[in-house]
Image 1 (cartoon, rainbow, N blue to C red):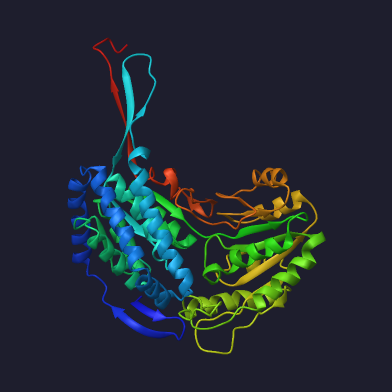
Image 2 (image 1 turned 30 degrees about the horizontal axis):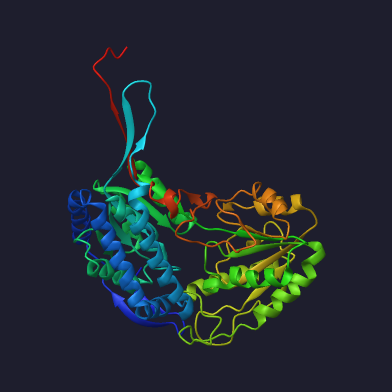
Length: 460
């Protein structure tokens, strides 16, 4: 697969990049390993300075980086600016808190003393997706650089300029050569990198297929892996919810990043008493979205990341309708150039249909009617995925009780599933394992070393 910037607004090739040959890949891994020998001993204050400088660069050049994101994968320009700002916040979060997170942990023992020391383990490979091309990278880079690990990034092949920009940011911020390296390689080279004995662990955000392959390769090499895979997040609306407030959240939950988000609301599970009102108002809001150039501030519906992605999503819609689902809104692609898919609402979706069983990565919502809390919980859990979920109700105790019964890594009440530096992010079931962000995220690739001291004595 070629490594190219293809602007999805007009589907035109902007720039093509040569893939790194095998010898340069090996050199990059070796460079990361050599840098690790020094970086692991570098004081926290110096590591924090690099992250803080990188965050400052992101904020200072936010417009430049946002335009790169939008050009490469079609994100609305204002959302791209928000992504850059969030990425800077994550770097500052770890620069500020990492040392306290990683302080030695005392273990109570009957005699002598014992403590846990949290040590870096080496070169970490990040295999990252195109949908949040800055945010996804800093989720792994920020905590691991502060731990003392070094990081290699294999970015998605359609956002090469984002990967290059991030490497330049860390270099400008003062990171020593090899602490953060961008690999211009295709997916077929990932297993080769994982097998390199100098790689200590691998983190992937992507599809189930890619995650299974990476986990298998890492497992055979006895290396730790973290996977953040797909989602089919339920958005539950109880009859006591404030419908107008909930609709505003629903539009964001479905349409942020044109629906190309692992934690986008994909299944709206609505109590029958308010379902008609919810469907009507959501349809009205989605119908007002304006298709256009994502670099234009007035555009409210941008393209998908690629023509291939748009075709795949349209096929899922059509195959679902052929099996009996009904279209409330949209259902067909706009008659214009670019990787666009119309905002679509499907009802009467049943098990066995693509829209019931598969992740719909784009501006397509499925709406289900239920009559009881238990029915809503059962439907929410009837998925291979378990990433996020959200519940909307004026009765927080009721919503919280339901949240405890939902099989997912995250449940938000009266707020769309979202992310912040201090919140752990990750899922269960086919949505992967491990956590990124928050204090939890910093411990995925560390050696939790026990150090035990005692007086000379008979060990038995």
